[in-house]
Length: 101
Image (tube, rainbow, N blue to C red; front, top):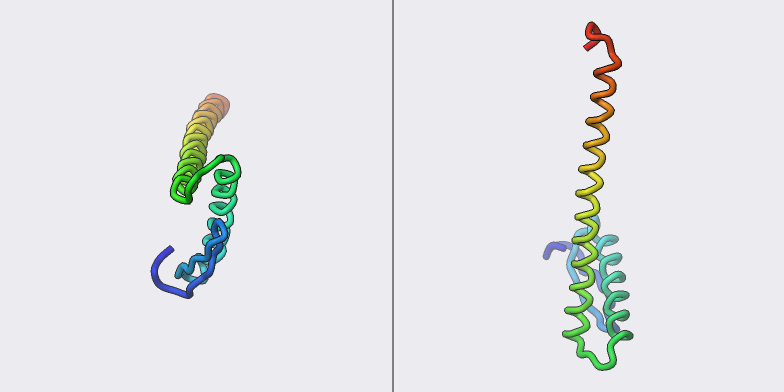
């Protein structure tokens, strides 16, 4: 979120934060805040005794892990799609008469 725009109030782990964002960014900011709040609550509920800093770091690590996994999955899927398209292209080239190429 950038520093300009209207302030939006988000609630994360029972704390209130005001973040400036543009109207176009508002929905994404609210969704991100809800997601972070959920992750931090999971960390807090799973820990016997954990300070706010520890909860925040564990939630951030989990979110980063999810992001990196998703990026890797997307990369693998893109590679697989490119390979399939190349195979289809080779089949089409073999099937089409030379005069049409």
